[in-house]
Length: 135
Image (cartoon, rainbow, N blue to C red; front, side, top):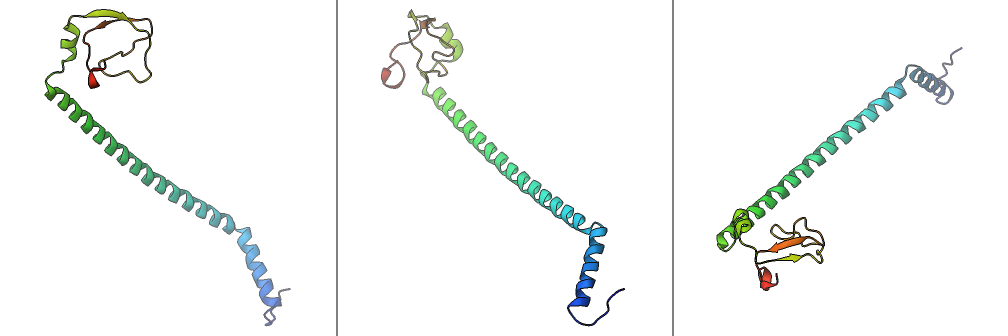
């Protein structure tokens, strides 16, 4: 038997409970939860893609700047006039040979000791070169 009293307490509580039971039986809470979860996932994907695009553009800007700096450095080295190309350097006569006693950790430039290990014999092509003539 359904109550139809006009008092605010008993009749409205029964109606609210019935509506709540009806919502639970047709899956509405699950649908609301699923839609909310999908909305959060979509927003997360959107934010991640925007962040990745920003990182990609930052990396490209750094790479362009690095390429510009390398090209400027190479142009400056070529304009100095006293540097030799790799072919000219390799055809230059050796002054003497020497056995490598130690390889400093960061001494791996473009023209000196690349891939050399302790005990290797190397040809010395120039002396007193580099900053302050220290090489």
